[in-house]
Length: 351
View 1 (cartoon, rainbow, N blue to C red):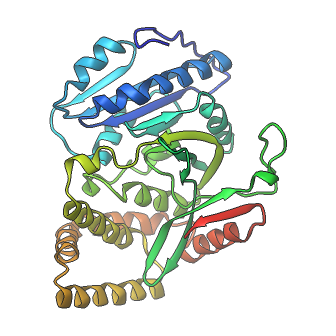
View 2: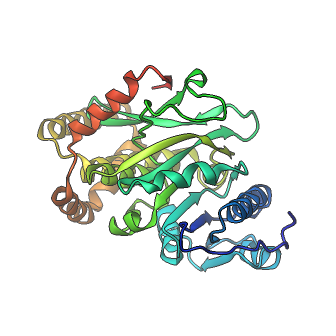
């Protein structure tokens, strides 16, 4: 399909519509590679299900001509132009604000997709307790697995949320049907390639924008969803291809990236960690990190801590909101993740 081909999307009252939101910043070259596969998948799903599919690209203040190119090459796409660059959380929220469908797929600008990925994601939302469904991400060059289902574990004062597991192929019957005995829960729905319940994201108030420009905003959103009693699932048959850190690594140096990631990691815990004993464990670990950082002149962590402390008024307010909404405790979530690890049909890729 050429960029100027307009998909003929029709809607049906009997099937849910789907929106695809792509935040981008100076990523025209990335969209030129990945967007054709997204449009092909959208058209295939729309024709297969006779439903509406909309694609929304939110330009976060790009200076590379992204918006003009999109409007010329893809006039049927909804293009939202922000004049000021803010970051991933704010830009994603701007996309969700424009969504007209009950299911929103959020994709990075450096992601390509398989043609059938929507057909595997959407059916999960027939369960009203599902908040999000995450894809399997393969490296765009090597096609090796870089992101799969995420297993959470609370250890040494922090949630570890980036360990991957996958479904053992022998547990999947011919035709790629998942065994009903396997519970593919994920502690995290990556903001780069996951489908979300639009209504539930809006109920949460979207991503916390003080986590801009990047990192941990999807962890924060995922923890808030889990603790409201909603579920995040992993769908290994929904395949995407990711060029890792294509945008962040181009615009920020390593020290900036480290500082922002450490700041947002702290903020996420200060909002979402509520078990009294675990809170004390977290405080103790932060104290040790402060001491070791002073001794080793670890300036990125000290700057991250100072930046997080400056946001305490926002953090306290968000923490109060989340405490009132708890339906699943920290320890119950940890036990659920332990159950995922113990299932015989799953394979731990890394911790």
